[in-house]
Amino acid sequence: MATRQPFTDSDTADEAVRSTCDDATTCKRYATSKGYWTDPYVQYFVRSVGERKAPEINRGYYARVRGMNHLLDAFIRKTECNCQIVNLGAGLDTTFWRLKDENLMPRKYFEVDFPMIVARKIHNIKTKQQLSKPLIETHSTDSLLLDGHCLDSDRYCIIGTDLRDIPVLDEKLKKFHLSPELPTLFLAECVLVYMTPDQSSKLVNWASDTFHTAMFINYEQVNMMDRFGQVMIENLQRRQCNLAGVEVCQSLESQKERFLKTGWENADALDMMTVYSVLPQDDVTRIEHLEFLDEKELLQQLLQHYSICWATKDKLKLGLSQVAF
Image (cartoon, rainbow, N blue to C red; front, side, top):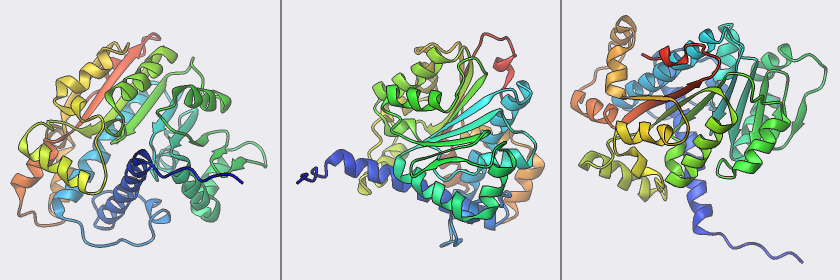
């Protein structure tokens, strides 16, 4: 009879990280219900709008979604859709469906996350016609490759694996036709921070080693050494959520350094307060009228403790270094 493996501290930590996927999706569902941006697909992953979220949280998510989409869409346009996208720790993200609606589909869109999260997402896709129909419309045969922890079609693939195990990650992505020759965009939102600096360096180094023309966009915490940052860390620790990679989140410079030390040619980074200030101001004005914000200073502090860092390497000379804000 097989003995059950003991439940370890690392299992608890991974479970806490998995729960952040639900937090992000719930916050996005609430913000879209208030009109911050449009996402007709998030409702199929989170049924209920849930409890009220503070206006500064909604504006923070608005800046995050708009900022990431700005760089993502610019990369796709630069490559004229002749590219592939790998969303690392994708959770219940709906970007694939948005890109199809906006006619910005890459050659293929890959998502990777813990097998448990992937199984949930596949279940949602299988049982919600609004999610499965776009996959079927972009697929050339009658059958999709589908099991509990992966789904593969011509233009969309979701894989359950641990991002800390690079050989297995590499093997699975190549099995589903991720091509080292195509321009490749990597997305990570609050993912690398849950790995040790050594683990995240190995991941971004694998990406730069494997793909000669690529971009990596990373959204996560920054300026975490001040008092506000310490409070954020303590709040997460109360939920058993340990920021194993927090030392890379000291500054914008330390964020860029991770990429420049691992084979990327260019790296840049902005805190989210700066990103918020350079987003199209007519839309920012619109969302600022959606809810009264009493705590403007709190919003500023919050946005100053998150950043977008992006890195490029460009053997094909597509002008990827021009993709910026």
